[in-house]
Every structure is written in structure tokens, then in C-alpha cells.
Image (cartoon, rainbow, N blue to C red):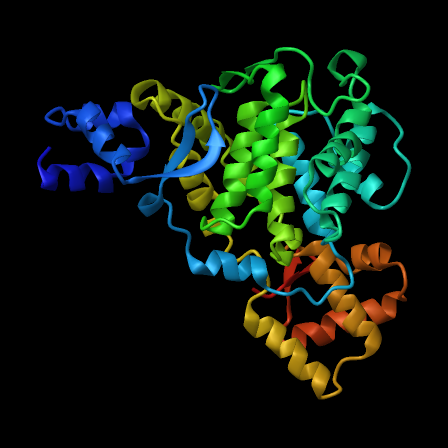
Length: 389
């Protein structure tokens, strides 16, 4: 193949869709192009497809901006391991992705510490416990802990026909998945122990792969293997987040990553399908479409996910100058954790914080607006507030 044509094909955005690439370049020999990719351009990873071949990806096509990693590494001035608002939105989004029945009021009820009152709230409670489990840095990613996470977040609340057999970490029968443009058969149950073992070694070993891409690949592989009868999508997203936490990306617990997935659900499912469709043409499972999806729809959308450094700096300066009381400092950290960038009212803050008089709350929002840390938004004769970003 002519070098100029090869370069053109490799740099084309449709390189993640081999069928469309062939339509766009009728003069190109796609099998020859694939052969050239196999000869040094595909980067292998130590995970296997169902035929035993290594998964691959195009390193040059999957570049993550350094800013995304910096955002996820930004330390949070919070006594909480997991941002309250982020956890609430993560639960809402992960259930929305899978069309699981729930209500936002029920999520808020469980987040407030109330006992579950029905099956839907049991599932919410399970996800809350699962998110708390992965937020603990002492919980390393091992086979036993993955099972503990599954049992805590999903398995305990499944009907009997979808439950695992006693003593089993994975399903004991075939599973077929039909969803929004996704049709897939999970790997044969008798191979799950070996394949999941490979995944756990891949997670635990240091690899040259970018951490954010590796997290997305772990996400893909759980859904690809489908080790459970139900809850595979939730487990894939939990493992993705868990890996980032284990690698020190503590702000991943203050940003609901699944919210970004929920907003681009079609692209999320299409990326799974595209990877398998391409494999029918190339003979290799190239995960580039899924990695590109996460780069474009999640990682590169995080720019405004946290308060800007200037906001944090302004708080630190005011604190150092003695302009902020201990109670106001606690309120500020609570606002960052509980609301993130979401608007809130003084009444809502009073109720949610639960340890300050309304006059204190009112004084706090007025002072922090003056300091440039909060902005007010008028709704008729009422005001709501939001962290400046």
C-alpha cells in the first residue's frame, strides 16, 4: 500500500470503523491496511478474546489530555472519602444507563441514611454500599474483593434465578445479552475463572498503558466477559472507578463518571458493538473504539467538573487571613462534597447540613458570595447558590 494512503487511513477518524473506512476509501485494500496495522501499529495487551488472541488498541489514536489526569488527581479538601453529590449522581446515572426502575427521591432517602423500604431502594442501598467499598483504599482489587463488591452492590438483591451458586464467584451457565444495539454472548462459563484471573493480574501488574485508558479497558473487558447473570454493566463501571481510586485518582470520587456515560448512552453501546464488528473484519478484538469513546465523551469533558483552582486558592487565602470561621469552613467543604456544581438553596443547605442555624447558613452564603466563591441565581423572589467555576 502507498505510504501516503496508509497515513491517510491511519489518521482518519473512521479508523475505528473498518467498514465505513472501506466505504470512504474504495481505492484502499482494507485487508492490506489491517495487515500493516498488525505489523507494529496495534499495541497488544495481556488479555484474550474468546479465541485466545490478545486484545489490541491503536496507541496513536487513543491519546488522553494531561488535563484529564490532573483533574482526577486534584486533592479534595473534604473529610469524606466520597463526595455525597457525586455518589448520588453516580447511582442515578448507572441505573439510568441500564433502565433500572428507581426514583431520585428514593436515592436521596437512602443517601440520607434511611432504611430501604422496597426492592428498588434495596438496589440503591446496595450501590451505595458498593461505592463506599471501592472508596476505601485498603480494599485492593483481588478476586475475593471483586466478589465481595459484586455481592454487596448487586448479588444480594437479585432474584434466585439470577443468583450465583453458593461458593461460586461467577455464573454457572451461558448468558445472552440483547440491548440497545448490543447483541453479545458472554464467554463460556467454564472459562471465566481463567479469563478473570488474567484480568486481575492485568489490574495488579504495572503496565505501560495510560491509567485512564487501562481503567476504560477494564470496564470494557468485564462487559465483554459478562461474568454474572445480571449487574455486569454496574460492575464494569464500578471496576473502572475502583481502579482509578487504587491508582490515586482521588477526585474520581467527587465526579460522577457514569453521568457522562448516561449523557452519551448511544455512543457507549455503539462502541461495544463497533469493537466486535471490527473483529469480524480484522480477526482481532481492537478496543480502540471503546477507548476513543471514553476519551471523547468522558475524560475530555471533565474540564469544569471541579471548582477551578482560583476558587480553591481564594478560599485558602481567606482562611489564612482569618476571614473564615471553623463553621464556615465546614459548610464550604460540605457544599463542595454534597452539591458539587449543582445549585442549592439556603433552606436545602440548612436541612442537609443539619448542624447550623438558618442565620449561620444565611451569613455563610452572603459572605462566600462576597468572597467570589459562590454565585447567586435569582428565581423570581428566591435565590439559589452555586460554587463558582
